[in-house]
Image (cartoon, rainbow, N blue to C red):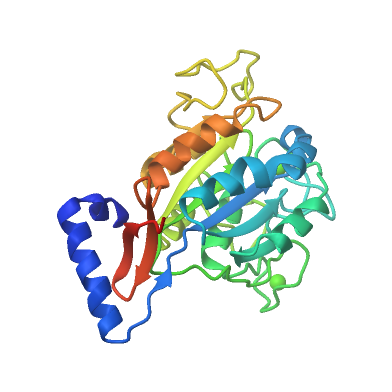
Amino acid sequence: MKTSKKLLDKKNLIGILGSLTFCSALGISTNAAALDVVIILDTTGSTGALLPNWQANMEASIINPIKAVDPNARFALISHLDFPFSPYGVTGEYAYRVESPLNSNIAPLLTALSSLTSGSGGDTKESQLEAIYQANTGLGLDLNGNGSYTDTGDILPAPLGFNPLTNSFTIHFTSPLDYHNDPLEPNYPYTGVVNNPADYNDALAALAANNNTYFALTPNPLLATGSSTALDFSGSSAGAALTLDSTSTAERLAAATGGEVLGVGSDLSGVEEAMEEIIDIVRPCPPGEIPVELPIGVACVPEAS
Ligand SMILES: [Ca+2]
Ligand SMILES: [Ca+2]
């Protein structure tokens, strides 16, 4: 549920401005609100080939447009390949890794981004659902159930630090749009696994718990799984929302959380347009107003001139 939309109503805004004064009179401090933004990079195969583009352009094309509407937005960076078991993934690779937890200072994120390398990911589908689940829960994964989170393929618990008062959204750069464990694959990532990686319902519940809107960015033109036919787009230009196979994991997660799947082109030329679309949806306040965090939630107040 998006509480911020209610705040666009003028009557609510007046009430909020009144409560701001009230809070101030009581000596209750108000903090600048902060959208929590989780950027997930699939660094396998064809998407990984665009890693240099992200390293060159992420600050300008993703972070700065968000900071323009919420100067205190916090950003986390996650990467994933797939579990390191054949045929799903490759030895030494990983299903989820925190590159940088939520932080309004983006310097650590940019440092981590600059040292990222791409990998294989084994088979076509990847561990996208587990990455989404871990980003939102930080619970870790003990695949063989031995109480240790450091065995091959395991994931150490590591909460990103979401702010429960504010909205969050995820930007997941990935391809294809069908993810492993949708539906549950009992032998993924290996036969005899004790604790299965997250399935669709687990990932969706984890997103919902953080009021986290899911957006998938994907290079286009796209090829349907097992097909040589490019999929149809609702708009022919990169950056437009895609109308794809509505049964794909990415489309269903996006639809269920109020997000979208957006094509950004095989050279990321559509990122700017995609970000305009995303910001229209997640923008915490109308133009000319900035979000402020109150004990009861987030309010929009006129920007100081
Ligand atoms: Ca894979
Ligand atoms: Ca273990």
